[in-house]
Amino acid sequence: MKKTIYLLLIICNTLTISAQKKLKNIKIAESYSKYLKNNSVKKDTLKKEFTNTCFTENWVTSQFTAYRNPNIKFPFEIVFSDTTYASPVGKKHVITSRYGWRKNRPHRGIDIDLETGDSVFSILPGKVRFAGRSTGYGKTVVIRHTNGLETVYAHLSGFKVKKNDFVQKGQVIALGGNSGRSRGSHLHLETRYKGIAINPEYVLNFKTDYKIRAKNLWVTQDWATTYYHSSKRQSKLVTLNSYEKAIAYKKRKRKVYIVKRGDTLSGIAYKNRTSISRICKTNKIRKTTTLRIGQKLII
Ligand SMILES: [Zn+2]
Image (cartoon, rainbow, N blue to C red; front, top):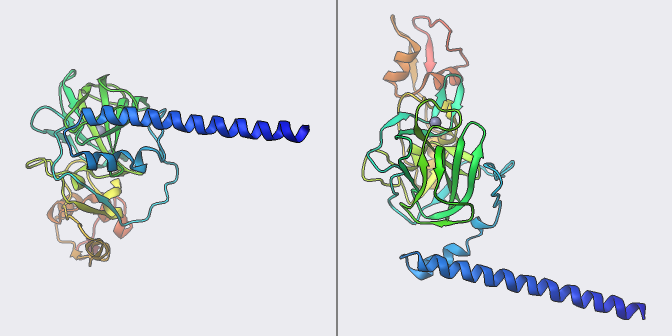
């Protein structure tokens, strides 16, 4: 008798699980057909994109951070199916601050000028992972794209999307503003992969034609470390579109600079298209160190 009850319980449980699975599949099919209706891209591509595990793995909608200790090794590859992106603001980009070291703290994105209330657009198609408030960032939208790249739009004044919404390239997702730790209205845009903030200028060309820098973009540690860049000027950009190039870049020979009379760290950094922080780190000196004439610096 006991055995029969036990068996019945197991059967019931299995049935509930399969019913749940069925329901989940129906839900997925429903949102998939809705997604198809709203998109003009080829159906096959969409189907592939929809089943992409990047929308299930580490899918956290309650907070800005989705990855804790991501197991990621440099260099890594990000593959794009698009060659261009949509502008995140409805006008020509005016960059007011770049990715890099800024006033002794990291600045993990790029600041683009806008007025409070201006529309903010998703640069690529994707799914809204987070839409809410986050410390420092203020009102923030995080969109995960089909290749795993996430774009972060911060200091917003209002939301036009909610978590789990699918968005198209160029769709209005929010209104720009000045929320969070921000002085004056602007858009703070970040490009992240598994939580790692990459210099957005390495991924996207902000100067011409809204081009994505490469179909196969290889990211070395240099492009994901704020310390190597200055928020005040553009870093010398080298697009690495193959594993071989990424490895060669990692092992590139450093130049030796001999300090001349009247040289300053900022002058040397400017002349050699690098940052003060980078020179300091490579040469193990402080920003305040007095340079000696004839001193050798690795650039
Ligand atoms: Zn910023």
